[in-house]
Image (cartoon, rainbow, N blue to C red; front, side, top):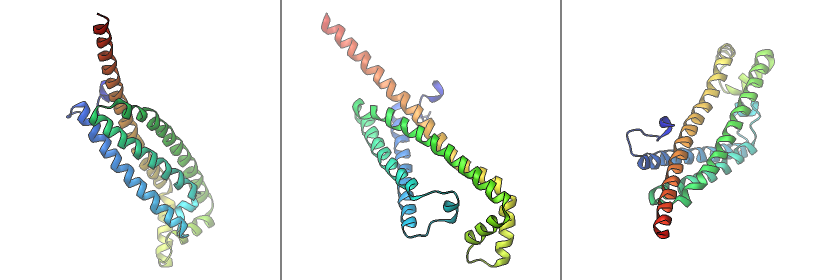
Length: 205
């Protein structure tokens, strides 16, 4: 597991763990504000046409928002735990973030499923494609919509694949972060057990 020894190979294990946790924390805060913005748009009936087509409902954002809050809290505790060498603040990360990783996998599978349905629907039904384009490019000239719609149709699979990749990339980053941080916490646990065993031996003597 040497390749997952730390996030930043140029830093010490502890410094690397703190730095990467802070970076992931800021990403989590950005995601939190993004979910809040999306929920506000839904509540104002201005949901993006693509989200409508993909059947992404308000419940999706509520789940995302709740998960973001839990993860942010976990990361804050982890950062404090690493800085102060408090294992009790680090250990919850191993289980909570692990559940988050599994939830992320479920989200990717679900997104791929609905994206495949979306592509199949628009590829096989010209009328549905026309309705979608008129909504998506609302306010543009008919000629512009026609040209963009044709381009959209020709590149539909590429666009869908690109949107899936944009979800998979953050997952890979999260997974690498989880594995390296998990290993760091495990190494701290091992060190503490070794110190405790030495103390027990010394006390026995």
